[in-house]
Length: 468
Image (tube, rainbow, N blue to C red; front, side, top):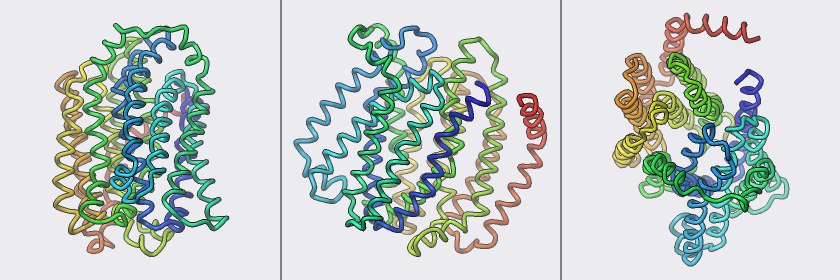
């Protein structure tokens, strides 16, 4: 993949991050924390449905894409079981709309369940269609389909602000639904050559059996991974309030925008590795990528830790202490990204049996941390617990790949990320006590990292010059 193609793939996440930096403060100023918390629950439902109802066949689709010539048949085989499953579940759920609305959102409004159901279906279909653009390396189309939801959502929120309508959760849910449906339509148009051929194709049940064997451990792992992202939000509702959940969600939104480079990397990483494997290329490239990703992550944590004090200036006074949980919220994105690098051996070897171990052990850790920390620290406790659980998630995934695939060097990884973890958790829980010392410690870590990785910087710069 050349620099131009990487730049086109990067366009979507970077523009989306820019829109996130615009939309998050607007929502924080315009909507109560409770409504932002409810929006987080809706988005969590959509993400869980995408992870669970795909049955792991989305990952199997990616794994088989370069080795199967009939992509239309492959897509039909992969998407049909989950589409049937999710349609049945949605149909049943609509009979219990009132109860589900109260359970999920604390509001008696059956329309919210209908909106959520349609958004879930749209997100599910969009997941598979986006994989086609990703695997075919149609970078610009893929990027625009990432930008679309953020752009539409931000536009609708600005319309609410301009027309001064009542700031209710229903409006946020509606904006989320419209953005989801429009991006699905856009993806459908860009991939029409493949899905329009469905009537002429039959499901390959032998291929489906192979894909399910590859994918079913990923369903277990996916459910556990969803739990890692969701348990803090659910615990905040149970042990605290929707207001604290809203506070936590704004912190996560900023952290997601900051981690935009991770989104670019994970978009191109897995297809690139499988292409290397298909060509029989060596493992030195994977080791080099691991080193680069580690360096980037430590520098990113250091810079955000040094300057996070500035974030509250863009938000209402009730978010005055949000800077203390930003680095902890970054753990979800950054630790997941580096675990994607270290765990890739499970996919290469097609041995995914251990894939479910990491998320479920980490989930137990997260539940325990939330139970202990949220009553005393609220959203900060949820953020600290999330970081620790994602660190456990990273370690187990890394060790699983080392056991199944090959025994690679890991001491440097653990040393740096453990040091980052100690600083993150201390500043998250006891930030006020380290107002001055915190940024200084991050600065010292940054300086040490730049010195320690100087050979890598020199090599990368020379390689970049050759590419230019």
